[in-house]
Length: 92
Image (cartoon, rainbow, N blue to C red):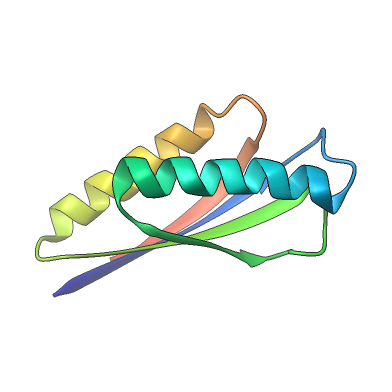
C-alpha cells in the first residue's frame, strides 16, 4: 500500500468574509473529491478569509498512479477561475 499526500495553498482575493471563503472552498472540495476520488480537507488558515490550505490524501498500489492523480489536481487548481494558486507540496 502506497500513500500520497498533497498540500496546496490558495489565495482568495475576492473573499471578504469567512462565509465567502466557505462557499468557494466547499465547491472546490466537492468537485475534486468527485472528479479524482481523493480525500480532501481544509487543514490550515481556517480563520483567515483570503488564505486556503487544502490537504489531499490518496491510497493506491502504485506510486505512479498517485503522482499522476495528485499532479492533475494541482493542474485543476491552477486553472481555477476564483482561487489563485500559491504553491504545493507533494509526498508519496
